Length: 130
Image (cartoon, rainbow, N blue to C red):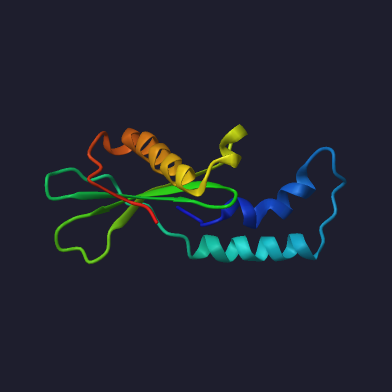
């Protein structure tokens, strides 16, 4: 299952579970808890990996303010919408924060190809980036 921006949604919950912090359940934690329950109820189910010459693999990548993200989708003949196989993201590391927007987009595409090759090998046929 995939929940977009999961780490941002649940971050108030992690704050109260850290050993260095005293446990205090406030309105921010209650709102995060309610939102994550709602997100779980409507989460996207990930599809099985399909193979064959007619199956198209599409990799979407993006570079945002706080990090990189990419997702892998498959579309088979007769389907109007592809099925998600996975979603990945990570924060910028070290000097990557200082990269230009174009360099960040290239990095997102590179990371996407590297990590999704474990799922579909070298069969990615289309890369879409903003």
